Amino acid sequence: MTSDRIYSNGKVTEDFHFNEQVAEVFDDMLDRSIPFYKTVIELSAAMIHNLATPGSRVVDLGCSTGTTLLSLSRLLGDMRLHWIGIDNAPAMIDKARRKAEMYGKASIIEFHRDDITQTDIHGADIVICNYTMQFIRPLRRAEFIRRIYRSLAPGGMLLMSEKTISPNRRINRNYIELYYDFKRKQGYSELEIAAKREALENVLIPCSVQENIELLSGAGFSEVDTFFQWVNFASFVALKEK
Picture 1 (spheres, rainbow, N blue to C red):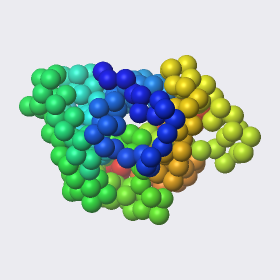
Picture 2: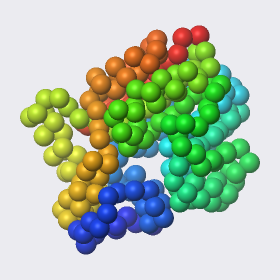
Picture 3: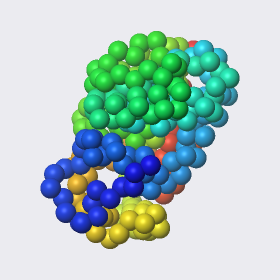
């Protein structure tokens, strides 16, 4: 795994985007930038195991380098699930396909390059959307979630994880500091933390936990809840009525 040193010099020459440079270090970036990333995948596997049926069709929107699907296919190998990953970044899809080949999963996981806000996922039983909606412009998010809801089969499930923001100013500031402490412990320097924050400004726009729940409920999901939260990161489960 290549180490993430993109912002080691503290310089930002362009806004953050999912290019070849990012794809090359993305797995390390996830491990060191998202608290309990592997725990969320393991919990997602448990949710799917308990609530889905064997043979279900699983679609990962914004699949990046395929880490989530590769991990879930290993954890849920006995369920004979159909795995599909979709992302609009060519570098991410190329890396996902290479990893699937390397781990012997190319025959069971499909990766497609497409616009996740427009792609046809009709009939999916499970949709995963991890740390993806935060990169969609806020005015487009409600329709994005409604589109997922309409596409899901009856009884379908959406698993979604997002960076969040607290509406309470002092609490939110404390959350931010706790998160930066986490990144320091992962080996990121103050320069790297500041540069990454600058690069993501106006690119990654988080909502509050309540706003995310309202988006999901407003789209029509009959049952919505958080299944994991660490400070300003939260994971949600939303179920469509059977």
